[in-house]
Image 1 (cartoon, rainbow, N blue to C red):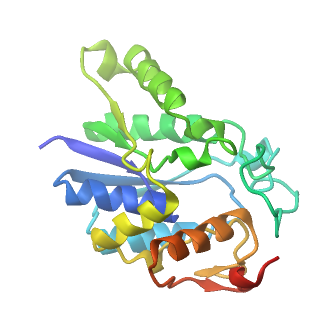
Image 2 (image 1 turned 60 degrees about the vertical axis):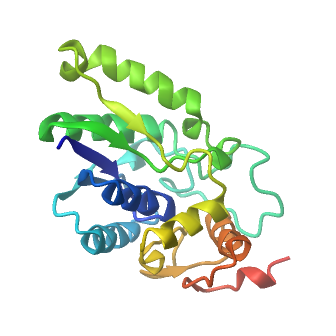
Length: 231
């Protein structure tokens, strides 16, 4: 059985992608990245998710993107809250080239452990906000791996799988529940007031709350502000 390397942030999407890989009978190892993110407590959620899914090989690598800044997640820039429209532009929570950095690390991890598949929880509903979630980016990165890795140069392949790419956010919630994932272990907030607690007002919290509402599934998340009462 060939191995699969999963990028596990601790958020809902990455956790569902990891659960999908495990349910497919793949031998899964997980990589989380401490990049100096404001919401670093998500790494605690990643550890809990990996443990719940039975992923024995879960590693955390540090790459401090605060040295670059340029994002509300890695710099002293306020996280936007109560935004009436999400997805109309690239928000300040975009971390420059983050998925390129994270996928490069995941590819390196895959080569070290002998994995042939890379799984990421990218989703097209993040297109307008996050250009590095686009299918074209993933295809181009797969080609870069073919050209620039020992695996590719030896005639092998590091395939990138994004099982959530074309699902709605509600569809991701439904899939996670169907796979038996404890979605309450995940954390989506950009600026959580405490471990396991969502602020309720940032873009990520609003998208998470709406996803559960549209899926018709009780939201187990704890919110500091009730997203249902936001203007």
